[in-house]
Amino acid sequence: MSKLLRQASIAFFLAWIAQSTVAQDFPTKPVHFVVPFPPGGTADVLMRILADPLSERWGKPIIVDNRPGASTMIGSEIVARAPADGYSLLMNSASFLINPSLRAKMPFDVFKDFAPVMLLVNSPLVLVVNSSFAAKSLSALVDEARARPGQLSYATVGPGTTQQIIGEMLKLEAKIDLVYVPYAGGAPAVNAILGNHVAVVIANYSEVAQHLAAGTLRALAVASPERMDLLPNVPTISESGFKDIQGTVWFGIVAPAGTPKDTITRIQTDLALVLKLPTVRNKLVAQGLYPVGSTTDEFGPYMRAVSVKYEKVIQAAGIKAD
Image 1 (cartoon, rainbow, N blue to C red):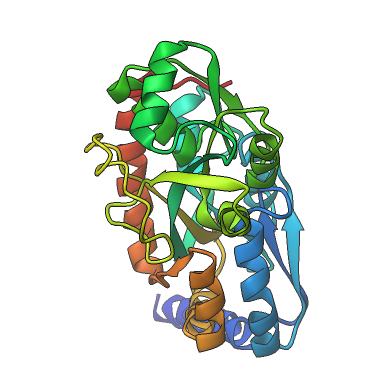
Image 2 (image 1 turned 180 degrees about the vertical axis):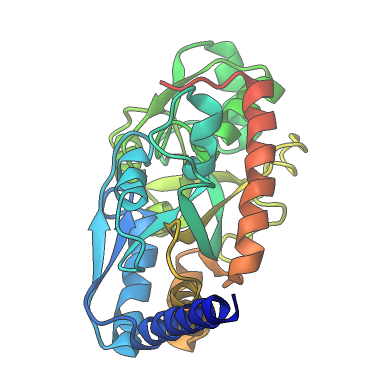
């Protein structure tokens, strides 16, 4: 028995040494970060800001792989089925946790098939209209929507997102009938409002910043608890009379379940260091993206708590999958 125990101990030790060596050597080839949104949106901008300094730190290329579609499930499934070696990672967001509450069948389990790496950033949401639109405030928009039920529409990055939840909560609390129009990404949604195809867009600040600065779009309210430093004159939704409506977009990184813990720790540690670089932080904040840089142990419970919150809101608002 003692001989068997010694052999088992030696085997465990050798396996531990091998895993530690792999983590120390990681990466030895390009790392793919799958972004389940189209190019040009907030998630894409965020990952491209992080890619160069992370590539410099690792000495290996970072591949930003845009795989939009099916409310982020196409990109998510790609990573769920990828080898658990740290070379395929997913940028996840609210849709990742909202989808299970909207769909009876999922091609993966968000908690069983993925391992948390870190929460990267938070970003306030902004309600914007075309500058030619008559409403100059959220209350004026609500008044017009009440006067024209079912004739005004609002767009978001896509169904099953925090943006849609905010829109549906506004409809419920304000007792208005806005027609929901989903788009496959933030950039297409913004293009729709620039072309006056929809009345309102609920978007991440980074997706509308240049248009707000140019005066082609007008911000009516922000969904964050407090006003944004970048938009000090724009009131919150709460200040506009709808106190229960708050929400921010968040982005994080997850890996396929079974990815070695030491590899995940290496990825988390280096991403956290990149987020702290002044040049990176300044670029992110300029886009309305506020660095968080959580630990892996913090990100797992965060996702579970947010999942419960989203499920309650979805049930209360009666949000359905399209």
